[in-house]
Image (cartoon, rainbow, N blue to C red; front, side):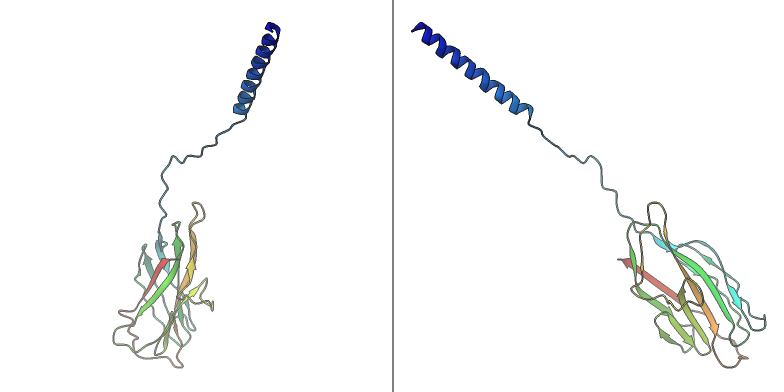
Length: 197
């Protein structure tokens, strides 16, 4: 009987050792994965503006008498445009750049054109015709048929490189005869408004 008790006791001890080794082996196979975020989300940035600098008008003339002069571009204004169109077909082209240095894409929500003071004009999109003078906003170059329009987009910057859009304002004498009178351009302006895309 003592022997049976020893065998039973030995069996119980072996069973307890086996159970402990199984639970230890199970614990060794258990893994916890933890993901933490320990920083602040950087804000998205809105930064659409003109590229600053001098904008020199390029003249196309039939008799070399037209002149375009230079304008100054700040981040939100281009000012100082002054043209002399001497004959039919004469044109001044001012090339400037709109840049997006932010992380938010933009789209044009409105294009507001202010007519020259005391002048009758017709406006369609980004084109304005005032008698014999036609104003247009083109993309890329002065002869492009791709006109700036509502809904046009500009992508956000790529890494640290701003997205650039080249825009050209053309002012052209599109009449049939040269005029002996001044064309009043005082008060004329384009206002392009971007909103988040």
